[in-house]
Image (cartoon, rainbow, N blue to C red; front, side):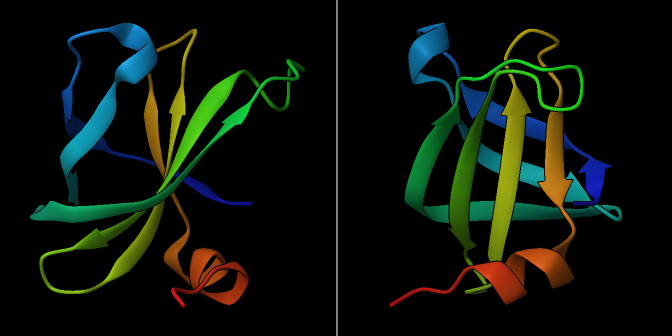
Length: 90
């Protein structure tokens, strides 16, 4: 899985409820219209730190998977090609 570091604007009233509102990728701002799914990676290994994942749909109807590593606070975009092959909206 290829992780692309991104800048995210998020709601962060409570760390456990933090979620992305928009993100920047390749100098373009993507406004998130819908969080279609969210899941938690609890097992902590050096290769896979504890993280939240978000399956989002943007204003332009594009679908992305975003990872938020909870210990470091870093946000990543999962390579769009890989994400589209693995996930789809019903």
